[in-house]
Length: 68
Image 1 (tube, rainbow, N blue to C red):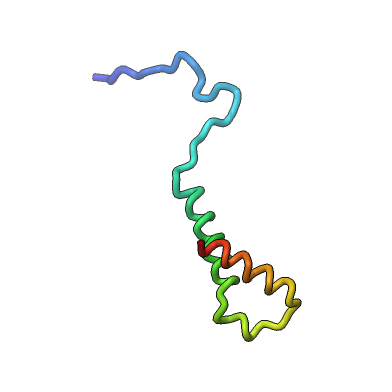
Image 2 (cartoon, rainbow, N blue to C red):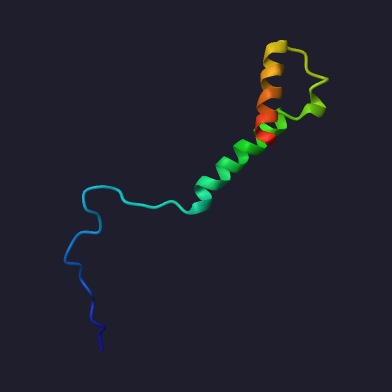
């Protein structure tokens, strides 16, 4: 005995790609970016770096702003 098959009356897509991302597909890259930014702004490693004082001053201000 054969089982009845269901046929679609309309196509699966309507002229474009329609998909939704899961929440973690946006949260994980954002979390990785913030964690890498915090590693760059870590003041304990700042003594070993030599560079332009204006850039280090900018990073210090950015870290203070993020800490609040």
